[in-house]
Length: 303
Image (cartoon, rainbow, N blue to C red; front, side, top):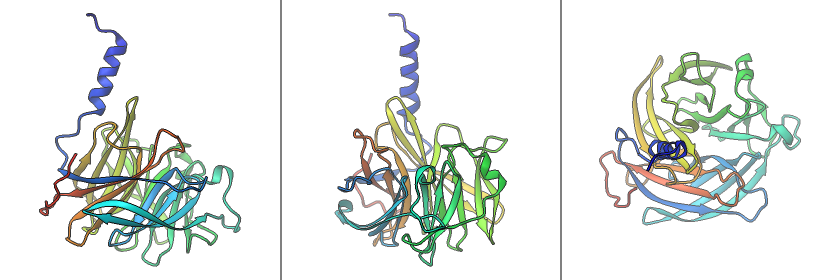
């Protein structure tokens, strides 16, 4: 049988999306949990932060809502989620965000409890002392205006010294690398770049308790989503020791966009991720957890 261009395209897509990288470390799948709330605003969850013990969660939707919740686990798996409070984000004038201002994507929480939230379309990063109070906008340099309309700051993370980092989804340097922006002393700079092979786009980030910078990336084709997590050690002048921690096959999980790295009571490093359902009935808000095998391999469930 002669092969058609369509068959060739499908085969190429399947090969590109369905083979996990042999260079990735072995991450152990712990479980997933479909989370839902009855409120009509619920959905589109794009970021999360967890407490040090992994139980308390703060999540953000891409329609400018913040929701808190408690995660319950049994045998290392999330078994239920108890919702807490929810908040509608407000502008600097105290009015609720509306229209093109609501596309909230990245979330990072500082040591004093204040929230940093990134927005696309009108590209900016805002600080909230509490989620119920008006925002304080951080300075927007001219470079932010060049960010793609729907490809701006998807990922935020704060390191142990309190420095805030922002990663754009689609913007690249002239050399094709991912720029890593830093907010320090009241100004933005771009001291680092991250290499990329172009197959995945950055969507979430966190600094782990080990001090490493973890980047969640997403790929997509006709057959669904795939995810990758890479990590680096950041020095004053460079990013070092890149590792591929996890790469999933296409369709393993939904549209994972938020990530939190933490250690459980046994000292095992975990990655908790959350999926954006795009308010589409065929997708779901999925909480996914993996353990990174750093010498404490007591889990048996894997993918």
